[in-house]
Length: 402
Image (cartoon, rainbow, N blue to C red; front, side, top):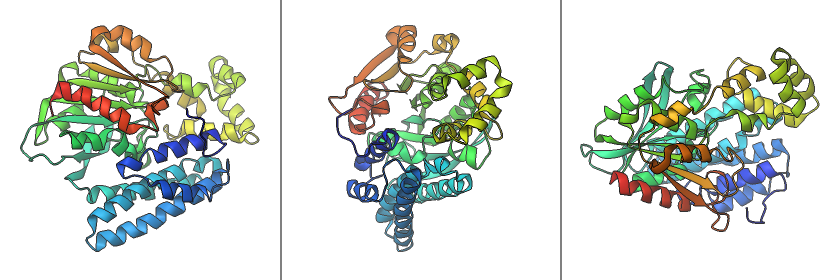
């Protein structure tokens, strides 16, 4: 990345870049971000949480007042930024050993996002998607096109912990501007499906995609022959699974990045001896992690984040679940649609996993490289979402003609 840092703490510095990337998409203001950072003690999770949450709460109060007064455009912008900031602050709540507080702030974040959706400049509504895996919450964005006009659809799927409030910069806003309709959803182990529905992470979405695609096809103003699945972060795995599960119903696939397995990156955060224990004596792993985590705050934070999408389970169960989250050779053989694979030059997650995907898909795949020189070299092109979205949607427009 560019040799410019906001904070010496690497994780927090990356998080600042994530938040700042939302500025062109109305989810952040650079001046607000700098004001918040002035109240953060570098590397201190509690000051990080408190500073971001305070700013988010202040924005929520203003957004509600604006909405009550009929100033929906102002309410929309303030609520979008509030949702973004509340989630950013809440990310480090497990490092503050504040699980109950983390759930409460997550709910505040989601309420701010719901307010933004109610005030959206074009028609948008919450939806419930019944699936065999459980009822999944989502949002339908119809865009500005006439209601009955058949348009292509982007189904946007984020990572395990990617909030839906990130969607404006990861594809939602650009899709609507170009004439697509958009479905956002929380899948198993994500967002409201997890925290409100108790639905844990599913390594495979075989029980999810047919029902989701049925729901999309059944909506007014949809061309079921022009459906794109777009996966961001871990969502690259589940979007690719979807294209394999229902190849006749997916016209285009975007993987940012391509993901063939979830375990490796998570396991890399576990000390080597504990990783070996999971392989050799898994029944002893949870007790060993609990013993060490008391004095190792980094390990405690890693454990809290790892088990979070698996309600009621421990570290061993979480690693077992992640180990089963794979894109198989059979999946790759079943994908039949044009597939765009995004490759960021300095990505640190899922490194190299694009290679077997490109090799297996052959002429179906198109690779787009994003570089550090253009500010787009970090994971999921954090820092340059406009660069990313322009190229992705230029590619899709040529195929789906929105």
